[in-house]
Image 1: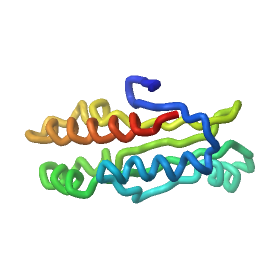
Image 2: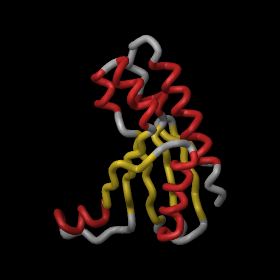
Image 3: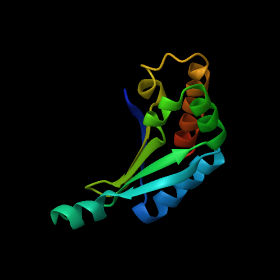
Length: 133
């Protein structure tokens, strides 16, 4: 598993079209649904005329945790949903990376939110780990 301070990722040695649904299923297994999907390749082609590789940003949401977090602090909506990126590498294969909620929520000092962040971190880490390359 590859990690950067703000995310945890994995390289999958498979076509993009088969990897993307596996990522969605891994999120679903941890109680997340994909509520937004940005097709970066399509947007860049339409807005800039730039051809690119398949690249999607998925907005993942775990409704019970999101509801509790918003009840604790309505401004937490600025940090939702959890982003997951899926993109095709230049030499084949797919990179998947899950945003690190610990980093995203470092500035939040609302009581009780830290436990929710740890819960989300665990779920996203398990989803990432379940994607065997």
